[in-house]
Length: 623
Image 1 (spheres, helix red, strand yellow):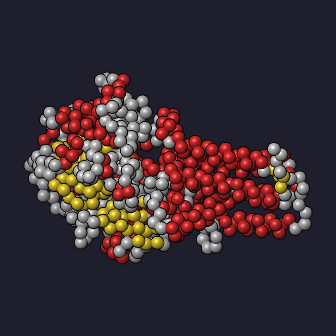
Image 2 (cartoon, one colour; image 1 turned 135 degrees about the horizontal axis):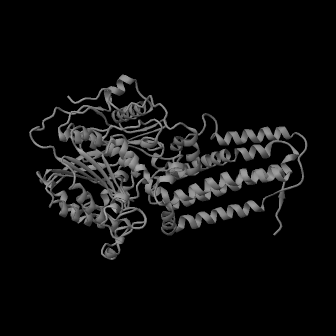
Image 3 (cartoon, helix red, strand yellow; image 1 turned 90 degrees about the horizontal axis):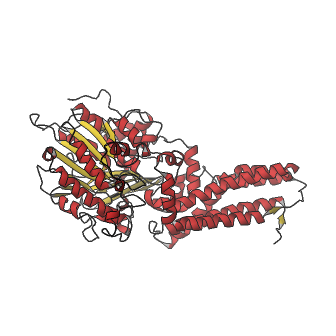
Protein backbone atom coordinates (compact mmCIF):
# COMPACT_ATOMS: atom_id res chain seq x y z
CA UNK A 1 0.00 0.00 0.00
CA UNK A 2 1.34 3.42 -0.93
CA UNK A 3 2.26 5.59 2.03
CA UNK A 4 0.55 8.97 2.03
CA UNK A 5 2.78 12.00 2.47
CA UNK A 6 1.85 14.99 4.58
CA UNK A 7 2.85 18.60 4.94
CA UNK A 8 5.34 19.10 7.74
CA UNK A 9 2.84 20.50 10.25
CA UNK A 10 0.31 17.74 9.64
CA UNK A 11 3.16 15.26 9.78
CA UNK A 12 4.25 16.53 13.24
CA UNK A 13 0.67 16.48 14.53
CA UNK A 14 0.08 12.92 13.32
CA UNK A 15 3.36 11.74 14.86
CA UNK A 16 2.38 13.30 18.19
CA UNK A 17 -1.11 11.75 18.05
CA UNK A 18 0.34 8.34 17.23
CA UNK A 19 2.65 8.49 20.25
CA UNK A 20 -0.24 9.61 22.45
CA UNK A 21 -2.49 6.79 21.20
CA UNK A 22 0.22 4.19 21.85
CA UNK A 23 0.68 5.46 25.41
CA UNK A 24 -3.07 5.36 26.02
CA UNK A 25 -3.14 1.75 24.80
CA UNK A 26 -0.40 0.91 27.33
CA UNK A 27 -2.44 2.67 30.04
CA UNK A 28 -5.36 0.38 29.25
CA UNK A 29 -3.09 -2.67 29.42
CA UNK A 30 -1.78 -1.53 32.82
CA UNK A 31 -5.29 -1.05 34.19
CA UNK A 32 -6.57 -4.39 32.90
CA UNK A 33 -3.53 -6.26 34.26
CA UNK A 34 -4.00 -4.67 37.70
CA UNK A 35 -7.79 -4.35 37.74
CA UNK A 36 -7.98 -6.26 41.02
CA UNK A 37 -5.93 -3.54 42.75
CA UNK A 38 -7.62 -0.37 41.49
CA UNK A 39 -11.24 0.17 42.38
CA UNK A 40 -12.62 3.61 41.39
CA UNK A 41 -15.65 4.24 43.54
CA UNK A 42 -17.97 6.02 41.11
CA UNK A 43 -18.64 6.89 37.48
CA UNK A 44 -17.45 10.41 38.26
CA UNK A 45 -14.05 9.09 39.35
CA UNK A 46 -13.81 7.03 36.18
CA UNK A 47 -14.46 10.15 34.09
CA UNK A 48 -11.88 12.09 36.08
CA UNK A 49 -9.36 9.28 35.58
CA UNK A 50 -10.03 9.43 31.84
CA UNK A 51 -9.39 13.18 31.73
CA UNK A 52 -6.35 12.79 33.99
CA UNK A 53 -4.91 10.31 31.48
CA UNK A 54 -5.33 12.92 28.76
CA UNK A 55 -3.48 15.54 30.82
CA UNK A 56 -0.66 13.27 31.98
CA UNK A 57 -0.44 11.52 28.62
CA UNK A 58 -0.11 14.84 26.78
CA UNK A 59 2.52 16.00 29.27
CA UNK A 60 4.46 12.75 28.91
CA UNK A 61 4.47 12.70 25.11
CA UNK A 62 5.29 16.40 24.84
CA UNK A 63 8.10 16.17 27.37
CA UNK A 64 9.76 13.09 25.97
CA UNK A 65 9.40 14.31 22.38
CA UNK A 66 10.49 17.86 23.14
CA UNK A 67 13.91 17.54 21.35
CA UNK A 68 12.19 15.97 18.34
CA UNK A 69 9.48 18.63 18.20
CA UNK A 70 11.98 21.48 18.51
CA UNK A 71 14.09 20.05 15.69
CA UNK A 72 11.09 19.58 13.41
CA UNK A 73 9.47 22.95 14.16
CA UNK A 74 12.52 25.14 13.59
CA UNK A 75 12.21 26.65 10.08
CA UNK A 76 14.76 25.56 7.50
CA UNK A 77 15.24 23.26 4.55
CA UNK A 78 17.64 21.13 6.65
CA UNK A 79 14.61 19.23 7.93
CA UNK A 80 14.37 17.41 4.60
CA UNK A 81 18.02 16.34 4.52
CA UNK A 82 18.78 12.68 5.19
CA UNK A 83 21.00 13.26 8.21
CA UNK A 84 18.38 15.40 9.93
CA UNK A 85 15.63 12.90 9.14
CA UNK A 86 17.63 10.09 10.72
CA UNK A 87 18.36 12.21 13.79
CA UNK A 88 14.71 13.24 14.07
CA UNK A 89 13.46 9.65 13.83
CA UNK A 90 15.93 8.61 16.52
CA UNK A 91 14.73 11.44 18.78
CA UNK A 92 11.18 10.23 18.18
CA UNK A 93 11.47 6.47 18.50
CA UNK A 94 13.98 6.08 21.35
CA UNK A 95 12.08 8.19 23.95
CA UNK A 96 8.70 6.74 23.01
CA UNK A 97 9.93 3.15 23.08
CA UNK A 98 11.32 3.86 26.55
CA UNK A 99 7.93 5.20 27.69
CA UNK A 100 6.03 2.25 26.23
CA UNK A 101 8.42 -0.45 27.44
CA UNK A 102 8.55 0.85 31.02
CA UNK A 103 4.77 1.09 31.17
CA UNK A 104 4.42 -2.40 29.75
CA UNK A 105 6.90 -3.74 32.31
CA UNK A 106 4.95 -2.10 35.12
CA UNK A 107 1.82 -3.92 34.01
CA UNK A 108 3.33 -7.06 35.57
CA UNK A 109 5.78 -5.61 38.11
CA UNK A 110 3.41 -3.17 39.83
CA UNK A 111 1.40 -5.85 41.60
CA UNK A 112 4.47 -6.73 43.70
CA UNK A 113 5.55 -3.28 44.79
CA UNK A 114 2.36 -1.20 44.41
CA UNK A 115 4.76 1.51 43.24
CA UNK A 116 5.42 2.70 39.71
CA UNK A 117 8.93 2.42 38.33
CA UNK A 118 11.07 5.41 39.28
CA UNK A 119 14.64 6.63 38.75
CA UNK A 120 15.99 3.87 41.01
CA UNK A 121 15.33 1.33 38.25
CA UNK A 122 18.75 2.17 36.80
CA UNK A 123 20.52 0.95 39.95
CA UNK A 124 17.97 -1.70 40.96
CA UNK A 125 18.43 -3.85 37.87
CA UNK A 126 22.10 -4.33 38.67
CA UNK A 127 21.64 -5.84 42.12
CA UNK A 128 18.10 -7.24 42.21
CA UNK A 129 19.08 -10.84 41.57
CA UNK A 130 19.88 -13.25 38.73
CA UNK A 131 17.98 -11.37 36.01
CA UNK A 132 19.02 -13.87 33.33
CA UNK A 133 16.96 -16.49 35.20
CA UNK A 134 14.16 -14.21 36.37
CA UNK A 135 13.27 -12.67 33.01
CA UNK A 136 12.25 -16.00 31.35
CA UNK A 137 10.03 -16.79 34.35
CA UNK A 138 8.43 -13.37 34.22
CA UNK A 139 7.75 -13.82 30.51
CA UNK A 140 6.01 -17.12 31.18
CA UNK A 141 4.03 -16.03 34.23
CA UNK A 142 3.03 -12.66 32.81
CA UNK A 143 2.71 -13.55 29.16
CA UNK A 144 -0.27 -11.23 28.75
CA UNK A 145 1.85 -8.18 29.65
CA UNK A 146 4.57 -8.76 27.11
CA UNK A 147 2.33 -10.26 24.39
CA UNK A 148 -0.08 -7.32 24.38
CA UNK A 149 2.73 -4.89 25.16
CA UNK A 150 4.72 -6.06 22.13
CA UNK A 151 1.55 -5.93 20.03
CA UNK A 152 1.07 -2.28 20.98
CA UNK A 153 4.71 -1.46 20.21
CA UNK A 154 4.60 -3.29 16.86
CA UNK A 155 1.41 -1.45 15.91
CA UNK A 156 3.06 1.83 16.91
CA UNK A 157 6.09 1.09 14.71
CA UNK A 158 3.98 -0.02 11.74
CA UNK A 159 1.76 3.04 11.83
CA UNK A 160 4.84 5.20 12.25
CA UNK A 161 6.31 3.77 9.05
CA UNK A 162 3.17 4.78 7.17
CA UNK A 163 3.67 8.43 8.10
CA UNK A 164 5.75 10.08 5.41
CA UNK A 165 6.89 13.67 5.24
CA UNK A 166 6.03 15.28 1.91
CA UNK A 167 8.53 17.10 -0.26
CA UNK A 168 6.58 20.36 -0.34
CA UNK A 169 8.39 22.87 1.84
CA UNK A 170 6.35 25.58 3.60
CA UNK A 171 6.74 29.25 2.80
CA UNK A 172 5.58 32.45 4.41
CA UNK A 173 5.45 33.08 8.14
CA UNK A 174 7.15 29.91 9.31
CA UNK A 175 8.41 31.50 12.51
CA UNK A 176 4.85 32.28 13.55
CA UNK A 177 3.91 28.61 13.11
CA UNK A 178 7.05 27.61 14.98
CA UNK A 179 6.25 29.93 17.89
CA UNK A 180 2.64 28.72 18.05
CA UNK A 181 3.72 25.07 17.90
CA UNK A 182 6.35 25.43 20.61
CA UNK A 183 3.95 27.33 22.86
CA UNK A 184 1.40 24.55 22.48
CA UNK A 185 4.02 21.90 23.24
CA UNK A 186 5.22 23.88 26.26
CA UNK A 187 1.65 24.24 27.49
CA UNK A 188 0.98 20.49 27.23
CA UNK A 189 4.36 19.53 28.74
CA UNK A 190 3.72 21.61 31.84
CA UNK A 191 0.19 20.22 32.20
CA UNK A 192 -1.67 23.46 31.57
CA UNK A 193 -1.45 26.79 33.31
CA UNK A 194 0.22 27.19 36.69
CA UNK A 195 3.10 25.10 37.97
CA UNK A 196 4.71 22.28 36.06
CA UNK A 197 2.75 19.05 36.43
CA UNK A 198 3.88 17.12 39.49
CA UNK A 199 3.34 13.47 40.27
CA UNK A 200 0.98 14.29 43.14
CA UNK A 201 -1.21 16.39 40.80
CA UNK A 202 -2.78 13.11 39.73
CA UNK A 203 -4.73 13.23 42.99
CA UNK A 204 -6.92 15.94 41.43
CA UNK A 205 -8.38 13.25 39.20
CA UNK A 206 -8.69 10.28 41.57
CA UNK A 207 -8.16 9.09 45.10
CA UNK A 208 -4.48 8.69 46.05
CA UNK A 209 -4.30 4.89 45.75
CA UNK A 210 -5.46 5.16 42.10
CA UNK A 211 -2.72 7.62 41.06
CA UNK A 212 -0.84 4.97 39.01
CA UNK A 213 -3.85 4.64 36.71
CA UNK A 214 -3.64 8.35 35.87
CA UNK A 215 0.12 8.86 35.72
CA UNK A 216 2.56 6.54 33.96
CA UNK A 217 5.94 4.93 34.53
CA UNK A 218 7.92 6.94 31.98
CA UNK A 219 6.78 10.26 33.42
CA UNK A 220 7.45 8.98 36.94
CA UNK A 221 11.00 7.99 36.03
CA UNK A 222 11.72 11.31 34.32
CA UNK A 223 10.34 13.45 37.14
CA UNK A 224 12.20 11.53 39.84
CA UNK A 225 15.40 11.89 37.80
CA UNK A 226 14.96 15.65 37.48
CA UNK A 227 13.81 16.31 41.04
CA UNK A 228 16.03 15.92 44.11
CA UNK A 229 15.51 12.78 46.15
CA UNK A 230 14.28 14.83 49.07
CA UNK A 231 12.52 18.16 49.38
CA UNK A 232 11.85 20.01 52.63
CA UNK A 233 8.41 19.39 54.09
CA UNK A 234 7.88 22.31 56.46
CA UNK A 235 4.29 21.61 57.35
CA UNK A 236 4.44 22.89 60.93
CA UNK A 237 6.52 25.23 63.10
CA UNK A 238 9.55 23.30 64.36
CA UNK A 239 8.47 23.55 68.01
CA UNK A 240 5.04 22.10 67.21
CA UNK A 241 6.50 19.26 65.14
CA UNK A 242 8.91 18.36 67.97
CA UNK A 243 6.07 18.39 70.49
CA UNK A 244 3.90 16.09 68.38
CA UNK A 245 6.59 13.57 67.45
CA UNK A 246 10.27 13.15 68.15
CA UNK A 247 12.32 10.37 66.53
CA UNK A 248 14.76 10.43 69.45
CA UNK A 249 13.65 7.38 71.36
CA UNK A 250 14.34 7.35 75.08
CA UNK A 251 13.76 3.91 76.62
CA UNK A 252 11.73 3.52 79.78
CA UNK A 253 13.64 2.98 83.01
CA UNK A 254 15.26 -0.42 82.91
CA UNK A 255 13.53 -3.06 84.99
CA UNK A 256 15.70 -5.97 83.91
CA UNK A 257 17.55 -8.08 86.43
CA UNK A 258 21.24 -7.64 85.62
CA UNK A 259 22.06 -10.82 87.51
CA UNK A 260 20.25 -12.86 84.85
CA UNK A 261 21.92 -13.64 81.58
CA UNK A 262 20.67 -11.65 78.60
CA UNK A 263 18.28 -13.54 76.33
CA UNK A 264 19.27 -14.44 72.80
CA UNK A 265 17.22 -13.00 69.97
CA UNK A 266 16.27 -14.87 66.80
CA UNK A 267 14.57 -12.62 64.26
CA UNK A 268 12.97 -14.52 61.38
CA UNK A 269 11.93 -12.40 58.39
CA UNK A 270 9.81 -14.32 55.88
CA UNK A 271 9.80 -13.21 52.25
CA UNK A 272 6.43 -11.85 50.99
CA UNK A 273 4.35 -13.07 53.92
CA UNK A 274 0.94 -11.41 54.32
CA UNK A 275 -1.60 -11.84 57.10
CA UNK A 276 -4.09 -13.08 54.53
CA UNK A 277 -2.38 -16.45 54.28
CA UNK A 278 -2.81 -17.41 57.95
CA UNK A 279 -5.83 -18.11 60.16
CA UNK A 280 -4.04 -16.26 62.96
CA UNK A 281 -5.29 -13.07 61.35
CA UNK A 282 -7.75 -14.40 58.80
CA UNK A 283 -9.91 -17.00 60.62
CA UNK A 284 -12.39 -17.38 57.77
CA UNK A 285 -9.71 -17.66 55.09
CA UNK A 286 -7.69 -20.51 53.61
CA UNK A 287 -4.86 -20.89 56.13
CA UNK A 288 -1.52 -22.10 54.82
CA UNK A 289 0.34 -21.94 58.13
CA UNK A 290 -0.80 -24.74 60.47
CA UNK A 291 2.49 -24.65 62.41
CA UNK A 292 2.49 -20.89 62.95
CA UNK A 293 -1.18 -21.06 63.85
CA UNK A 294 -0.29 -23.45 66.67
CA UNK A 295 2.78 -21.44 67.72
CA UNK A 296 0.65 -18.30 67.91
CA UNK A 297 -1.42 -19.86 70.69
CA UNK A 298 1.70 -19.67 72.85
CA UNK A 299 2.93 -16.28 71.61
CA UNK A 300 2.09 -12.60 71.65
CA UNK A 301 0.49 -11.74 68.32
CA UNK A 302 0.46 -8.12 67.16
CA UNK A 303 -1.14 -6.37 64.20
CA UNK A 304 2.07 -6.21 62.16
CA UNK A 305 2.48 -3.60 59.45
CA UNK A 306 5.20 -3.15 56.85
CA UNK A 307 6.69 0.26 56.06
CA UNK A 308 7.08 -0.57 52.37
CA UNK A 309 6.37 -3.08 49.63
CA UNK A 310 9.95 -3.98 48.74
CA UNK A 311 12.47 -6.14 50.56
CA UNK A 312 15.15 -3.45 50.74
CA UNK A 313 12.66 -1.10 52.40
CA UNK A 314 11.36 -3.68 54.86
CA UNK A 315 14.73 -5.05 55.98
CA UNK A 316 16.08 -1.51 56.46
CA UNK A 317 13.04 -0.46 58.50
CA UNK A 318 13.31 -3.53 60.74
CA UNK A 319 17.03 -3.23 61.39
CA UNK A 320 17.39 0.55 61.64
CA UNK A 321 14.00 1.93 62.67
CA UNK A 322 14.01 4.21 59.60
CA UNK A 323 11.31 3.81 56.91
CA UNK A 324 11.55 4.81 53.25
CA UNK A 325 9.34 7.85 52.68
CA UNK A 326 10.60 8.66 49.18
CA UNK A 327 11.03 7.02 45.80
CA UNK A 328 14.59 5.86 46.49
CA UNK A 329 15.09 3.34 49.34
CA UNK A 330 16.54 5.13 52.35
CA UNK A 331 19.58 2.88 52.47
CA UNK A 332 20.47 3.86 48.88
CA UNK A 333 19.83 7.60 49.12
CA UNK A 334 22.69 10.09 49.01
CA UNK A 335 21.81 11.56 52.38
CA UNK A 336 22.41 8.52 54.59
CA UNK A 337 25.44 8.05 56.83
CA UNK A 338 28.08 5.43 56.07
CA UNK A 339 27.06 3.69 59.29
CA UNK A 340 23.57 3.16 60.67
CA UNK A 341 22.57 2.93 64.30
CA UNK A 342 20.36 -0.13 64.41
CA UNK A 343 19.55 -3.35 66.22
CA UNK A 344 22.87 -5.20 65.56
CA UNK A 345 25.31 -2.50 66.62
CA UNK A 346 23.22 -1.64 69.70
CA UNK A 347 23.18 -5.27 70.82
CA UNK A 348 26.91 -5.51 70.13
CA UNK A 349 27.47 -2.80 72.74
CA UNK A 350 25.91 -5.16 75.25
CA UNK A 351 28.03 -8.18 74.38
CA UNK A 352 25.88 -9.80 71.71
CA UNK A 353 27.32 -11.69 68.76
CA UNK A 354 25.30 -10.65 65.68
CA UNK A 355 24.75 -12.51 62.42
CA UNK A 356 22.52 -12.07 59.38
CA UNK A 357 21.54 -15.14 57.34
CA UNK A 358 20.12 -14.81 53.83
CA UNK A 359 19.61 -17.79 51.56
CA UNK A 360 20.15 -15.83 48.34
CA UNK A 361 23.19 -14.79 46.35
CA UNK A 362 25.71 -12.68 48.23
CA UNK A 363 25.33 -9.08 47.11
CA UNK A 364 21.70 -9.33 45.99
CA UNK A 365 19.89 -6.04 46.76
CA UNK A 366 23.12 -4.95 48.51
CA UNK A 367 21.94 -6.68 51.70
CA UNK A 368 25.53 -7.58 52.57
CA UNK A 369 26.53 -3.91 52.43
CA UNK A 370 23.50 -2.91 54.50
CA UNK A 371 24.39 -5.51 57.14
CA UNK A 372 28.00 -4.33 57.27
CA UNK A 373 26.90 -0.75 57.81
CA UNK A 374 24.34 -1.82 60.42
CA UNK A 375 27.07 -3.54 62.42
CA UNK A 376 26.52 -7.28 61.97
CA UNK A 377 29.53 -9.40 62.88
CA UNK A 378 28.72 -11.95 60.20
CA UNK A 379 26.80 -12.10 56.94
CA UNK A 380 26.04 -15.67 55.86
CA UNK A 381 24.56 -16.08 52.41
CA UNK A 382 24.64 -18.54 49.55
CA UNK A 383 28.46 -18.57 49.44
CA UNK A 384 28.81 -19.48 53.11
CA UNK A 385 26.09 -22.11 52.83
CA UNK A 386 28.06 -23.79 50.04
CA UNK A 387 31.33 -23.49 51.96
CA UNK A 388 29.92 -25.56 54.82
CA UNK A 389 30.15 -28.57 52.53
CA UNK A 390 26.88 -30.21 53.55
CA UNK A 391 24.71 -28.92 50.71
CA UNK A 392 23.09 -31.09 48.06
CA UNK A 393 22.03 -30.20 44.54
CA UNK A 394 18.36 -30.42 45.54
CA UNK A 395 18.90 -27.67 48.14
CA UNK A 396 18.94 -24.98 45.45
CA UNK A 397 16.04 -23.49 43.52
CA UNK A 398 18.32 -22.42 40.62
CA UNK A 399 16.92 -18.88 40.74
CA UNK A 400 17.16 -17.11 44.09
CA UNK A 401 19.29 -19.46 46.15
CA UNK A 402 18.66 -22.03 48.89
CA UNK A 403 15.24 -23.45 49.67
CA UNK A 404 13.94 -22.48 53.12
CA UNK A 405 14.05 -25.95 54.67
CA UNK A 406 17.79 -26.69 54.22
CA UNK A 407 18.77 -23.09 54.87
CA UNK A 408 16.87 -22.89 58.16
CA UNK A 409 18.56 -26.09 59.26
CA UNK A 410 21.89 -24.45 58.39
CA UNK A 411 20.86 -21.46 60.53
CA UNK A 412 20.29 -23.73 63.55
CA UNK A 413 23.64 -25.49 63.09
CA UNK A 414 25.61 -22.29 62.69
CA UNK A 415 23.78 -20.43 65.46
CA UNK A 416 24.71 -23.23 67.86
CA UNK A 417 28.37 -22.28 67.37
CA UNK A 418 27.78 -18.71 68.63
CA UNK A 419 28.73 -17.56 72.08
CA UNK A 420 25.68 -16.36 74.01
CA UNK A 421 24.05 -13.91 73.99
CA UNK A 422 23.54 -13.61 70.25
CA UNK A 423 21.31 -11.98 67.68
CA UNK A 424 20.49 -14.23 64.73
CA UNK A 425 18.55 -12.61 61.91
CA UNK A 426 17.40 -14.80 59.03
CA UNK A 427 15.68 -13.72 55.82
CA UNK A 428 14.04 -16.52 53.78
CA UNK A 429 13.72 -16.61 49.99
CA UNK A 430 11.41 -19.38 48.74
CA UNK A 431 8.09 -17.47 48.82
CA UNK A 432 9.23 -15.23 45.96
CA UNK A 433 8.37 -15.25 42.28
CA UNK A 434 8.74 -17.64 40.43
CA UNK A 435 7.60 -19.54 43.58
CA UNK A 436 9.65 -22.73 43.21
CA UNK A 437 9.34 -25.84 45.38
CA UNK A 438 11.75 -28.73 45.95
CA UNK A 439 10.97 -31.70 43.72
CA UNK A 440 10.09 -33.92 46.68
CA UNK A 441 7.30 -31.55 47.79
CA UNK A 442 5.65 -30.98 44.43
CA UNK A 443 2.02 -32.03 44.70
CA UNK A 444 2.11 -31.99 48.51
CA UNK A 445 1.43 -28.27 48.82
CA UNK A 446 -1.48 -27.00 46.70
CA UNK A 447 -1.26 -23.75 44.76
CA UNK A 448 -4.83 -22.50 45.20
CA UNK A 449 -5.66 -18.91 44.25
CA UNK A 450 -2.04 -17.91 43.75
CA UNK A 451 1.30 -19.73 43.31
CA UNK A 452 2.67 -18.08 46.46
CA UNK A 453 0.30 -20.09 48.65
CA UNK A 454 2.08 -23.37 48.08
CA UNK A 455 5.38 -21.68 48.99
CA UNK A 456 3.89 -20.20 52.16
CA UNK A 457 2.75 -23.69 53.19
CA UNK A 458 6.24 -25.02 52.43
CA UNK A 459 7.77 -22.16 54.44
CA UNK A 460 5.50 -23.00 57.38
CA UNK A 461 6.62 -26.62 57.26
CA UNK A 462 10.25 -25.44 57.11
CA UNK A 463 9.70 -23.36 60.23
CA UNK A 464 8.20 -26.39 61.97
CA UNK A 465 11.40 -28.32 61.31
CA UNK A 466 13.51 -25.32 62.31
CA UNK A 467 11.82 -25.15 65.72
CA UNK A 468 11.96 -28.93 66.15
CA UNK A 469 15.73 -28.77 65.74
CA UNK A 470 16.14 -25.54 67.72
CA UNK A 471 14.34 -27.05 70.73
CA UNK A 472 17.18 -29.57 71.02
CA UNK A 473 19.77 -26.80 71.42
CA UNK A 474 20.93 -25.55 74.83
CA UNK A 475 20.25 -21.94 73.86
CA UNK A 476 16.57 -22.46 72.95
CA UNK A 477 14.91 -21.74 76.30
CA UNK A 478 16.87 -18.50 76.72
CA UNK A 479 15.84 -17.12 73.33
CA UNK A 480 13.18 -14.69 72.18
CA UNK A 481 11.85 -15.58 68.72
CA UNK A 482 10.34 -12.83 66.55
CA UNK A 483 8.62 -13.87 63.32
CA UNK A 484 7.58 -11.23 60.78
CA UNK A 485 7.95 -10.40 57.05
CA UNK A 486 9.83 -8.00 54.81
CA UNK A 487 6.53 -7.02 53.16
CA UNK A 488 3.17 -8.53 52.39
CA UNK A 489 2.62 -10.80 49.41
CA UNK A 490 0.04 -10.46 46.63
CA UNK A 491 -3.39 -9.50 47.95
CA UNK A 492 -6.06 -12.03 47.02
CA UNK A 493 -9.21 -10.34 48.33
CA UNK A 494 -10.48 -6.73 48.49
CA UNK A 495 -9.78 -6.47 52.22
CA UNK A 496 -6.07 -6.87 51.54
CA UNK A 497 -5.90 -4.41 48.64
CA UNK A 498 -6.78 -1.13 50.37
CA UNK A 499 -4.62 1.43 52.20
CA UNK A 500 -4.41 -0.74 55.31
CA UNK A 501 -4.69 -4.29 53.99
CA UNK A 502 -1.87 -4.02 51.43
CA UNK A 503 0.74 -3.65 54.20
CA UNK A 504 -0.49 -6.21 56.77
CA UNK A 505 2.21 -8.63 57.83
CA UNK A 506 2.41 -11.10 60.73
CA UNK A 507 4.27 -10.17 63.90
CA UNK A 508 4.59 -13.03 66.36
CA UNK A 509 6.79 -12.96 69.47
CA UNK A 510 7.46 -16.33 71.09
CA UNK A 511 9.26 -16.75 74.41
CA UNK A 512 9.72 -20.40 75.51
CA UNK A 513 9.97 -19.23 79.14
CA UNK A 514 6.56 -17.55 78.93
CA UNK A 515 4.48 -19.58 76.45
CA UNK A 516 1.19 -17.90 77.28
CA UNK A 517 -0.71 -16.81 74.18
CA UNK A 518 -2.03 -13.28 73.81
CA UNK A 519 -3.66 -11.31 71.00
CA UNK A 520 -2.71 -7.63 70.99
CA UNK A 521 -4.72 -5.39 68.65
CA UNK A 522 -2.01 -2.75 68.68
CA UNK A 523 -0.60 -1.86 65.25
CA UNK A 524 3.14 -2.52 65.31
CA UNK A 525 5.09 -1.34 62.30
CA UNK A 526 8.53 -2.56 61.30
CA UNK A 527 10.18 0.58 62.67
CA UNK A 528 8.73 -0.24 66.11
CA UNK A 529 10.92 -3.33 66.42
CA UNK A 530 14.10 -1.41 67.26
CA UNK A 531 12.71 0.60 70.20
CA UNK A 532 10.57 -2.32 71.37
CA UNK A 533 13.54 -4.68 71.48
CA UNK A 534 15.68 -2.17 73.37
CA UNK A 535 12.88 -1.79 75.92
CA UNK A 536 12.31 -5.55 76.13
CA UNK A 537 16.00 -6.25 76.82
CA UNK A 538 16.22 -3.49 79.41
CA UNK A 539 18.82 -1.39 77.58
CA UNK A 540 18.98 2.39 77.97
CA UNK A 541 20.48 3.32 74.61
CA UNK A 542 19.01 6.45 73.05
CA UNK A 543 18.43 6.04 69.32
CA UNK A 544 16.67 7.56 66.33
CA UNK A 545 13.59 5.48 65.47
CA UNK A 546 10.52 6.45 63.50
CA UNK A 547 8.38 4.24 65.68
CA UNK A 548 7.70 3.55 69.34
CA UNK A 549 8.02 0.79 71.89
CA UNK A 550 5.06 -1.52 72.43
CA UNK A 551 5.63 -0.99 76.17
CA UNK A 552 4.94 2.74 76.05
CA UNK A 553 1.42 2.97 74.60
CA UNK A 554 -1.48 0.60 73.80
CA UNK A 555 -2.15 2.46 70.54
CA UNK A 556 0.02 2.09 67.47
CA UNK A 557 0.47 3.60 64.04
CA UNK A 558 2.17 2.83 60.75
CA UNK A 559 3.54 5.19 58.09
CA UNK A 560 4.46 4.45 54.48
CA UNK A 561 5.03 6.21 51.17
CA UNK A 562 2.73 5.28 48.29
CA UNK A 563 2.76 6.72 44.79
CA UNK A 564 3.70 10.24 45.85
CA UNK A 565 1.50 10.25 48.94
CA UNK A 566 2.16 9.66 52.62
CA UNK A 567 -0.20 7.36 54.48
CA UNK A 568 -0.63 6.62 58.18
CA UNK A 569 -2.74 3.77 59.54
CA UNK A 570 -3.44 4.02 63.28
CA UNK A 571 -5.48 2.39 66.00
CA UNK A 572 -8.68 4.28 66.67
CA UNK A 573 -8.50 5.82 70.13
CA UNK A 574 -12.08 4.84 70.98
CA UNK A 575 -12.02 1.34 69.49
CA UNK A 576 -8.44 0.02 68.91
CA UNK A 577 -9.78 -2.83 66.76
CA UNK A 578 -10.73 -0.20 64.16
CA UNK A 579 -8.16 1.69 62.14
CA UNK A 580 -7.98 5.32 61.02
CA UNK A 581 -6.53 6.23 57.62
CA UNK A 582 -4.66 9.52 57.21
CA UNK A 583 -3.24 10.69 53.87
CA UNK A 584 -1.15 13.62 52.67
CA UNK A 585 -0.93 14.01 48.90
CA UNK A 586 0.09 17.40 47.58
CA UNK A 587 -2.50 19.83 48.90
CA UNK A 588 -5.02 17.10 49.65
CA UNK A 589 -5.40 15.97 53.26
CA UNK A 590 -7.57 13.06 54.38
CA UNK A 591 -8.20 12.19 58.04
CA UNK A 592 -8.98 13.79 61.36
CA UNK A 593 -7.26 17.13 62.15
CA UNK A 594 -5.30 15.50 64.99
CA UNK A 595 -4.05 12.63 62.83
CA UNK A 596 -3.18 14.97 59.95
CA UNK A 597 -1.06 17.13 62.26
CA UNK A 598 0.69 14.06 63.68
CA UNK A 599 1.46 12.63 60.23
CA UNK A 600 2.78 16.02 59.14
CA UNK A 601 5.09 16.04 62.17
CA UNK A 602 6.39 12.54 61.39
CA UNK A 603 7.06 13.37 57.73
CA UNK A 604 8.66 16.71 58.61
CA UNK A 605 10.95 15.13 61.19
CA UNK A 606 11.89 12.40 58.73
CA UNK A 607 12.92 14.75 55.96
CA UNK A 608 14.74 17.11 58.31
CA UNK A 609 16.69 14.23 59.81
CA UNK A 610 17.56 12.52 56.53
CA UNK A 611 18.43 15.71 54.63
CA UNK A 612 20.65 16.88 57.46
CA UNK A 613 22.29 13.46 57.73
CA UNK A 614 21.25 13.47 61.37
CA UNK A 615 20.08 9.94 62.11
CA UNK A 616 22.32 9.31 65.10
CA UNK A 617 21.65 10.71 68.57
CA UNK A 618 24.50 13.00 69.43
CA UNK A 619 26.64 11.73 72.30
CA UNK A 620 24.55 8.61 72.60
CA UNK A 621 25.29 6.90 75.89
CA UNK A 622 24.08 4.26 78.29
CA UNK A 623 22.41 5.73 81.35
